[in-house]
Length: 133
Image (cartoon, rainbow, N blue to C red; front, side, top):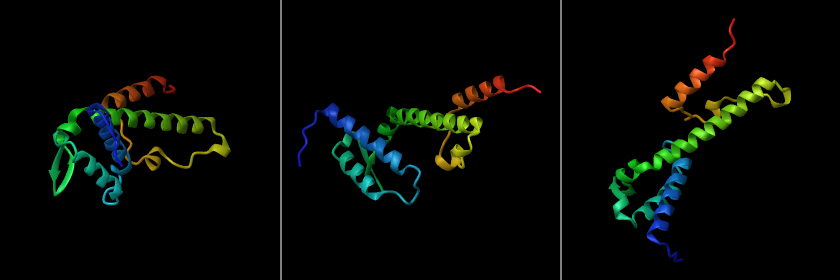
């Protein structure tokens, strides 16, 4: 198979592969999907400027990883976290027996985290709307 891509299209493909592999493998520890790691390594090997060798494997370079890709991933994670949180809280607050939430955010998404700015914003809103006794 042969695919003809412009340099810009190839860079976008690398971004998609990196983000996809991050979503699939970043929380798996030693139980990673090796096929996806191998494909990521194979594609990044085609771009020496964006890759480096680590323990005999081609990986995305530190410059690539620190070049903004994780900001895009963090934005996605924050959006998903808040959507899950809003749904979970609304189901709890509506108290529908058939819709009782039996899980928590941590059980659905064990690596959920809030950035410090969002945590401060969320905490201050929570305090402003808390009922007074």
